[in-house]
Length: 158
Image 1 (cartoon, rainbow, N blue to C red):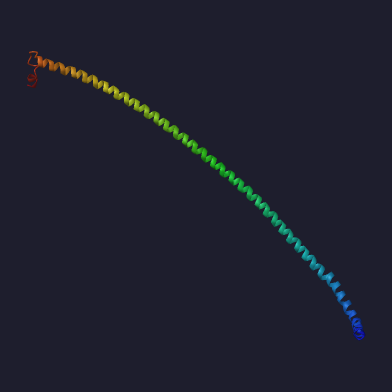
Image 2 (image 1 turned 180 degrees about the vertical axis):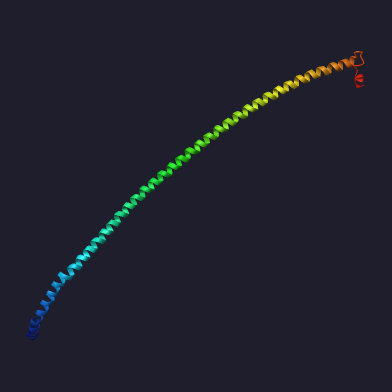
């Protein structure tokens, strides 16, 4: 074992300058290269995290706006429905009014026509009554024979 240690002693002594050189190289690389790379990586990570955070915020804002637009759209849709319903009611009311007016006019015309018809019936009855009386007189005169030849039906025919 002592033999191994005696062999390792000079190796350690000769490796000291290499270790110092590697240590200095690491320090120089750390200050010149690694710190800059780490700074760039940290900056990139900050920007990435910031961009992701901004993207999340914008997504949340877009969702809020989307909900607002949807609510506004729903409100407008309901308003349009209410307007259509009001217009439909108004059209039905106007239709009912037109139908009432048409019924009144038809009833009025029917009453006038019935009155004219009743007047015509009465006139026809009067004319028939006078014609019946006149015809009855003529028949009576013909049957009773007035004595005049003009009153006889045969005399009339000639």
